[in-house]
Image (cartoon, rainbow, N blue to C red):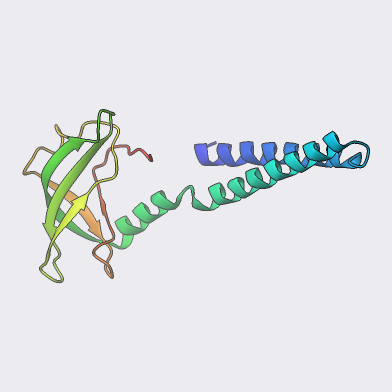
Length: 152
């Protein structure tokens, strides 16, 4: 089971438990004011967690789907690495590169996703790195560093 599926299952179970708690507390809502407050609070938490679960299921794989689409349908160009650096003090690396759009002849700048490992040994300054451009919008691209990325 991958992380996305495990997350969705976990959030669904938690949502169901909160909805069950809401129903249990709502059963005797007229009995006391405290029980009514707890029922509303549990219902609100269940609603927020359910909305979170739906949004997580819809959008969690967006970056991967976009990357796969660009790899399959995008125009591949070779860009020259201009900078390899860290973001702050964290172990979060990024590659910056420049390349020419073959359709328009315009020079473009590219930034990779945030990377877990130092890509400097694999992509030293001046080397080339593959970049996949959207055929309709060259501002939409993906730098293929072939290193695991972080989603921060």
